[in-house]
Image 1 (cartoon, rainbow, N blue to C red):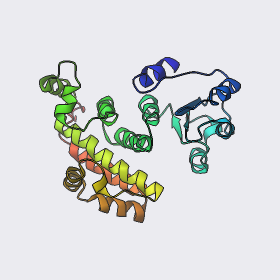
Image 2 (cartoon, rainbow, N blue to C red):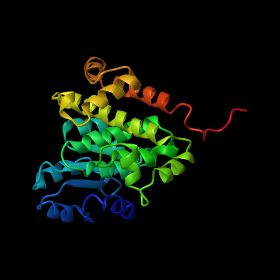
Image 3 (tube, helix red, strand yellow):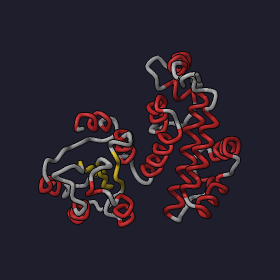
Length: 258
């Protein structure tokens, strides 16, 4: 796990490891952006995050736990998150932990939007596309086929199309999927904070509004109203169905019917 996490986080933030609670507490006397707890024994202690909160120099540092769904210490995932003791419990046997940890390492409230968007991506797209959607969602650039192609070693749209052809997908479709996920995640996170920012305050607001209408039949304010009326899960369900429709007919790697 150390090797995987160091490799995933290296482009985004420096990483240090602590092998004991006292060592980690000593490290937290200095500012930190993110604390990742390996929630397996001997650190399978649901009271550990609260002790770390009390010791941290920077109380704003996110604390997340990596644990299997079988570990009883972290069974009360939602209760721990609601109490503010932890920001997230990532189920390493059910979720793709590396991109989620990377998203939590990002600055400010952006990390919560990216975590939400990544989970939506994993729930609504085929497994073969996960690494591609993650690449788009974790990018700092404005999402378009041209900027995505420019990030490739040979700066070639042809190479990008050839890479995605193996998965039976058009680059424009996948870029639009990522843009929909980003827009919806912004609304869901805003609904949790009860302080949703007006749609016009973020870049590409007009194109995002048009894309949501074309793919989900909703405006950003309509998505906000749905989240307020029926809860975030209703928005996630609507988004999963919309993404499924966007990808329908493009994923040619499904087994043929017999």
